[in-house]
Image: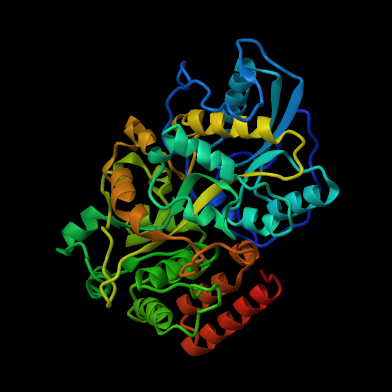
Length: 468
């Protein structure tokens, strides 16, 4: 499956200093591709001239200094999370660290999402992996299971001791846990939320829905004369994400607490997917949705072809400001059982067990976590910050961002819901196309039961191939 990149996105080529690229083969469209092609650049402000002081210490990596070091080299691979300035901002931050930490030299490599899986597996297999990287939400647990990731329990203890732990948003460390260990570090959040056009709702005298029944009724009323209540993008992951969001909203999810597949066997999941199929059967979805990429769905929403869209926090950045002023966030809606919830991913940072300098790498990690706000304020970082203090910046002082932080993040669950921890199969499952195909089938009004059973078989195959 192919897609066209958003012209506002980070270049698809590596930005490398003192490193070499890896040759890889193509992989399926994944959530990372969805992020890359769908989330626009958020607003920009200049990098602050004053960065917070190093918050590390205690790992023996080096001391604060005004002159650059070079005795220890740490390789940091950072994925393409923002606009065309993102890698430049990341590079500038690394230079600031190097200039203030004698004895440590961090080499920054901006890494595209294309072939991300092959890039990291090839590097690990050949022993050329970085010391530290950002990456896919479930990449850490898959590589930890093969003993290639370094646990970070000691870093967590230090952050709790120095008072920084309280600045993290609720529950964000839960997806970092595997077999009782903190195996990766949270740094940002991607989440699915329902947007609506306030002007179209007002014109049709439709109230903002608070329940699924009201949602369906509103979508019906807003459909007609070539306009629709909803638009989606079946050609990438957006429909898949909406289906998972509905399952979680309905009190279920893909898994049981003990990590068994619970997709087609859970009546709550079937009810959630039936609700989606009913919206389609009602004629409430723009019929072009099955072939749309997320950028297409955003354009249709912006044109007023549809009044509602489930997407990511960066979607409004791709809309004209004159349209954004008429875009609102629907508060969390109650399912038929009174439950509320949505889907999110806690993006993480990984330290690899192959590093020759674990202490210095942990020192850099802690510094990076304290000083990376410019990734948002200038680098157009698409995911949301994970630090409460960052939301004091004017960039996030908007009704939509504040509502996401206060209303949606506290009720969000990861794609492993209702399992109590992450597990290795989640990484290949995150990049698999089974649920993408399911979304296209439901948008295309294919037989519901056949579509569900086909998806069940596909998910079972992925999980069976990745035990643990």
